[in-house]
Image (cartoon, rainbow, N blue to C red; front, side):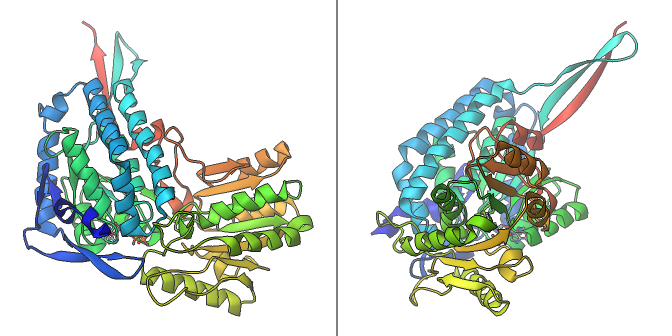
Length: 486
Ligand code: ADP
């Protein structure tokens, strides 16, 4: 019955405001991670479909097109209309997301409230984008204009399928770009449902296009296309390297990359332990650990280490895993078999290296992709679970003594997406926030992300921002106009 959520249009490509088959008629299966069974066959975009979508987006961006002629405030109205429709369809969208991704339904419904706010934030920003007037030498002056970069390709992962789409669509549409969104091959359904809403909101033809397909085929063709002016990518660091290569090999298109992480969450011994256990638990277990900014290295100060571990283990054991549609379930399946394999491999390696497995560490059942909530203590910095991005429900608890030591260890990673600190000592909190090499820092909270706050990494976590006004910089070019008076 749940499969009835999948309307026929959600199995097509979305090009120029129409749902169409791929020219080759090729399709690929979409899997329900609860049982590993196929729930739909979705059109797979090949290079020739990419060419069509890019041509539509290019035409929509052409000088004097309906989209380019629109007043900024009217662009804002379209984004707000899109937000209204997202509100209206929350239930169906959330159910479809849960069906395709295995994310608990209650969590998705909560997420959607935030996504609506993101669209409204960018809707309100459309008519507030402007340049400067700058004095110059001589009898004249300079104007700068903020112009949309043009056709943008947006390539997103499967961990927050609706969320990542909204994070990308918001600033691109706010700036006046046109776009081709490529959802992850695991989770194309809700991206297509969102496409239907943009059509209903009456975005002009070709402004929004959605191309399901595989990374090395659809994604690569988008990244190499000479009419695409920018790629906004969220995904793994390995593919991030490739995206930059594609740009170098083609037209030097602009690139923004939001990549992996191995983020430290530091808990000082003056913290309220129960509160710290709760924040640290959610920081890693939220979305089954499938979160680029997950607090995946929990550093706990020596004096409270043993008590913290004991309570963290109790909490992990109490976590309800099961059918993501069922009320009270906090953890559904991981996204796919390769994910499960990777998690279990890191667990095994870490055990071999001497980490202490406090709970979990195994797959649940033989159907679908469920993994037990897992906690390691006695972890040292070189162990696999302390180094590698696990992207699974595995808490890794390390012990530290001093603030100087923990800053150095926290930064001793190739990544730099996020970090957190829990303490009542504001000096320690600020010293850590200042020193940590990360794009976002949370003090006495974790994973707190809103429409207004820019999000993005440093080091191998990438560059460029999602959310906030800062994200618009990635979608705007500054044009300098120098004027000499007679
Ligand atoms: P994950 O490990 O989270 O699946 P990936 O980086 O593999 O992350 O995938 C994120 C997104 O990047 C997906 O939409 C995927 O299809 C896309 N992708 C994967 N490989 C490539 C590639 N070679 N070129 C362009 N996009 C790709």
